[in-house]
Image (cartoon, rainbow, N blue to C red; front, side, top):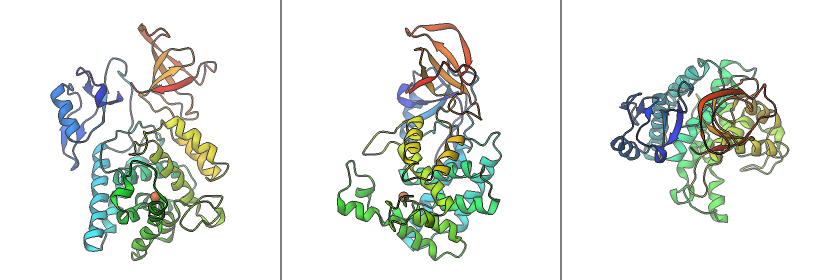
Length: 354
Ligand SMILES: [Fe+2]
């Protein structure tokens, strides 16, 4: 199975997983052939990608860590609670905590706790999907740190609520297609403090979760906002959320730029780990977030085309790939797999949008 953009469907693929609507009801079941009429239905619901089982991807497992149903319900809950605050000046923390418990349960019960997802994106309002993704990333990486469950939950709550202050930022600024001007950026820079002020009224939220919300845009070298503090004052778990936040933002399509690929963003974050980001957190992130998720199509350095079949969990940069096309673009009569961890002269040059 693999993730495929709706625009690339030929009408012969079968769905690899159930597709849900925002309320968690099944829209289409796994195994359904995605004919044109279904493509229209999916587009109408805001889907831009689906999991399909096709000739190339047969038998490849994609562990999405979180059931799609849970992911959608969590987004809805975040949206509902953020809007509640705007309408009634209240936010139901218990309901958000329930979501976080469910997210943590699902991630912690996955076979190998690595982030191996070519995330299925919809055109949902960005902030809600982003909040859930950052939570999933933070819990995935945090689960490998030597912290107890209570601490992990504080991390998860801070992560899912990190951008709650954006409810006060006007739509025109959040979704501006170009670069923000000074006045707009000044407004944007207020969102961490605005979010902190909302949560400060809530005794159930611990100081660490509040610190995450207040400081997720602070940088190790003091160039962040809103306080421009230096590393010593930024909690370790906040530094992790900063890395997860940047990763998810950069791998998402935004009105002002296209999404970057996972491996490109990971390289970029590594570069920033000498200045703005915490090196230790970036290192942990690299160990547990796959730069070439299973099901992604790649071009190898010998020109062959392959699909990522399985991760080597102790070396995510060198997965096992299934080669299906030669350097001239001819489909192979029979595919074969190469373990890049054992064949060190072969490596991945790029991932392809196919
Ligand atoms: Fe933010």
